[in-house]
Length: 253
Ligand SMILES: [Zn+2]
Image (cartoon, rainbow, N blue to C red; front, side, top):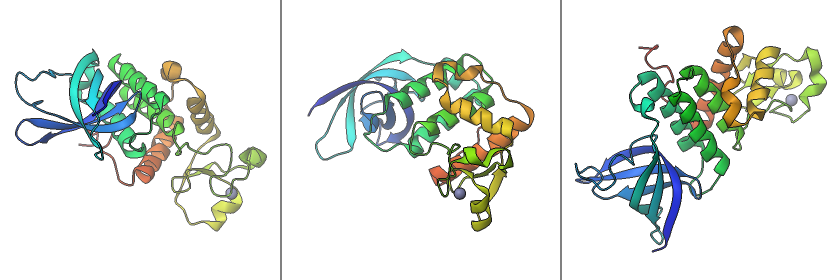
């Protein structure tokens, strides 16, 4: 059984058998994968808290032939992001980032930029940046690193360059099409459209361009914030194929 070694982030874990856990990781070198951690629920487990949700660890796994479930042999804590397990709003933000990565990345398809963006997202939340805004920005960034990058330069339906639409663009965002849709397509299609003002569009394009390290310098409030929250929420629901637990679940109680 080959031994795999990689930095990893725990996306989620669930109980398995008497004392074990099945953990879904996003790893730097191998992308998303799952592993069984034998004895992880025992009080004196050798894994300690290295497999807690949102913890970054150095992970060793044995790859089992013809099985997508690996065996976790060792996990050493690298970065814990403690606030993410103590504050409910931060926990909800981190859970959304982890759920989005779980939903939109294929197994065993390494993408170091996704790993770095997730680590940086957890870091920003842990440092106390505004959780809902931080979560919005990092969702935009994560989508932008996958085949689900929100389309803003071309019509998401017909591919026409939206620059040519100029000031006449109605700024209609279709979650189903995956981005802005040009006026002729708006009339042709019966999608549900969300309006993005020029300010929201500029913000979205800037967030997609920026590196994760400086992403939390972007600030949005008022109309820009609410338009983008609605559009990204609709889009995330569409690409995940289901409604993910809300970012602000306390506010909605
Ligand atoms: Zn079009």
